[in-house]
Image (cartoon, rainbow, N blue to C red; front, side):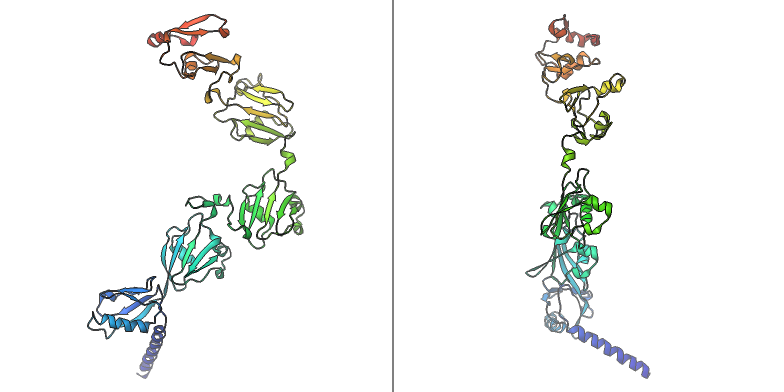
Length: 461
């Protein structure tokens, strides 16, 4: 019996101590308050203090509680509720949960006010706002508190896990997530690779800029201990034309020249230049290898990837055409021109080569040559100068598009008429004149109107 009484006394003492401690706490936005009113269903759930610092009570309305103690609020409640309820003798108030109200705005999926536990941090707030949109600028986030703005680097926190990099949150704080400079002021959806193409940093004074003969030039976030190798890897490495022996590093002092090839051959880390925030790295082009010379062939015109392509001894015409991605759908492969470095010009018919390669070999290719694939005649505006005189047929008179058109042995009269877009409304279809040998041969009349009525063999025309 004595043991039971002792246990009861101990329990009562601890409970009283806990309540006394809670009564002195200051109420803040986000806190959940439980108001005990026996027999009243409207008071069975706790009341949460909103962003303005008030709670909404049934029959009474809004009561401002932020910044007050539980004791002070209890006295106000007794005065307000006594007007509505008969028995308030058992009324008391306590904290049910200490929570925070934080507003998350900007480049997030669901910008809104969120409720966090007492120890909730920035990452929890962002998760409750649906996470960040693709294109959010992680290294320049803002925490707005009253009239102050705190800038913090959330990207650095994700890289290191250092919680000290995140500001501690309070009720009423506003977290603003800006968009990357790449998106401008328009919300857009794009993948991580498209972000990387322009770099991932906004402040060039706190970043490393890599440009020149690299695959993805841009401005990239600086990480302590970052080397020039890591900087170049962020730019997806150098291109095939990069002069890796004369890379320039521009910092606060005079520019340095770094020989990447020598470093890769020797592994001498003492040759690595120091990279700091604000450093600019420039990879120059190998000018002597790109200018017109014996090692470069130019492929131009209607190919998928026109440009200058490095040659080697024994390289062929087909090799170069393949390097340029081959002819596109508009290429006239029967009129390919090869312009030699010495000024000579050769014509090559790829169709004849494919039909009879033994008697139609492709031309020899040397450094400095130009391979040109013209556009098909029927793809561009018709002109008397498009086709050579001995490889074309002339269509004149009452047709919609008179001109000189490429001739082929497989073409028919109607094919040619179709190239000229057909006769006009005023055309006399019964008196079509066909003249051979440039007007010196025999004249032939063709009655298209009769042919359309009764048929015939127009293939012999």
